[in-house]
Image (tube, rainbow, N blue to C red; front, side, top):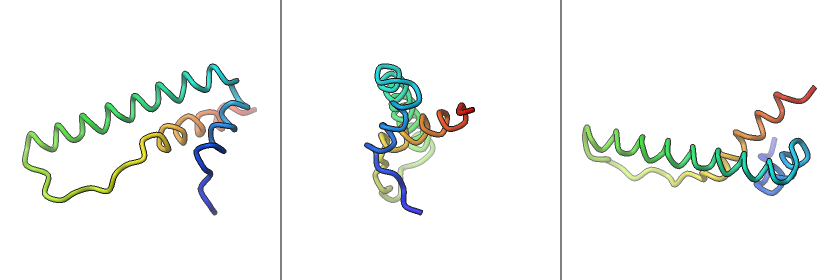
Length: 76
């Protein structure tokens, strides 16, 4: 099963909650993903150096998936 694109996820979120609320929810989720990533890296760095490079995370995709999954749970 192929992963939905960012545009498809956003369209589904907009269909659930409307455009303004979708933008707010995804923006909040994106901010949470950024903070969680930064805090995780700070904690890792305080104990030891990062030994190998990690693959870059697509934080927007993660935020969209998080909001989308909540919208799916809220469907009747």
